Length: 83
Image (cartoon, rainbow, N blue to C red; front, side, top):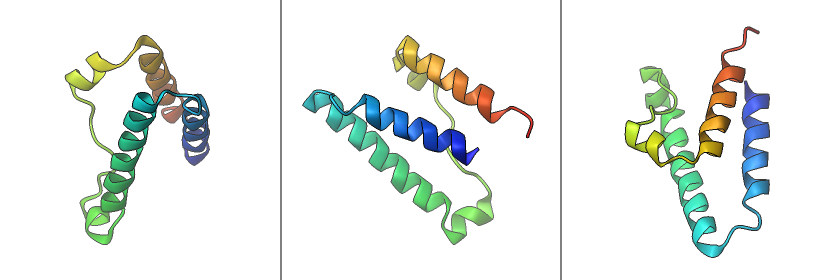
């Protein structure tokens, strides 16, 4: 699972290397929010609750481009493959 995540992150950063300043700011802000959220969830208190990540809302999904939805489906498929 970590391998899949690492590949995904590398690809996302590579794709956004040449983003315009507005896109780069949005991209960076989203990754910072993710980092803070993950840090909280992996803290001692977060581990006790046993929940990592967050559910996507319908609004989130509607705002995604087709390419993003395809990436999300690929990630889900890989994550659900038997070990």
